[in-house]
Length: 100
Image 1 (cartoon, rainbow, N blue to C red):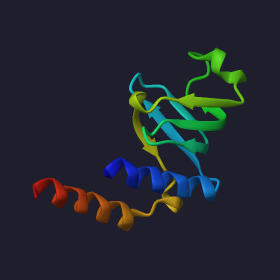
Image 2 (image 1 turned 180 degrees about the vertical axis):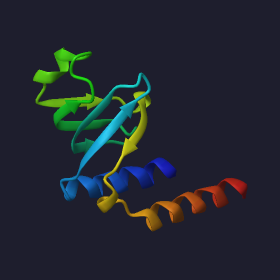
Image 3 (image 1 turned 60 degrees about the horizontal axis):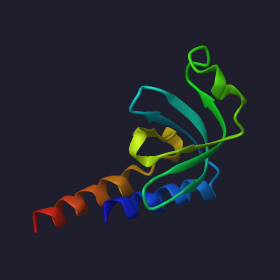
Image 4 (image 1 turned 90 degrees about the vertical axis):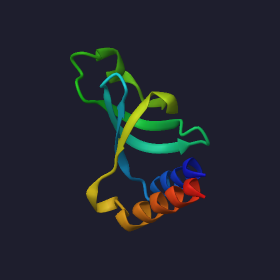
């Protein structure tokens, strides 16, 4: 399953203490270090920072943030942490499986 691949990939980011930016479907962007990801790609971030604190001042005091997977639009991974070949290969394999 594709989500299982991404779950494993994101768990690798947890082990390397990588900070990511998660963009939600409502346009809000939250940056922080992933500390948890589950089968539904729900995330927990520690020390979250929002892209526009003036619009979301209530989020400035959070120490951690749980983000429901169904609200995630994109997960932005720093270029130096991106394993592009692994992601491309996994996506190609998923397309092949779907065609069979």
